[in-house]
Image 1 (cartoon, rainbow, N blue to C red):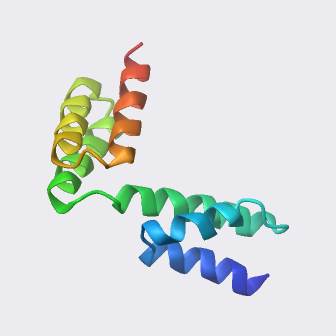
Image 2: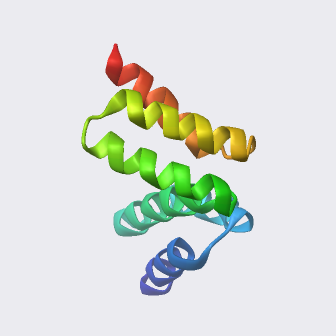
Length: 102
């Protein structure tokens, strides 16, 4: 089980789109800590899947979202989506900000 924990942790640090499937499998592991690390790793990977141009706007959007500046966050997420239409997490965070606006 320790090996699976370390693998989930490492994939969270350096993983890319090719590691999403193994990390998704970690969510069904018998060890609850492996599940938690797998979930954290998936979020980490998803946050890194955009292009560099999209990443700048995305990071700023995340900072603004954390400050509850929802309209500004949405604008940044839209810029990230415009820079990389395949950046699913930017669209997800944009939807979350819209939801929080009501």
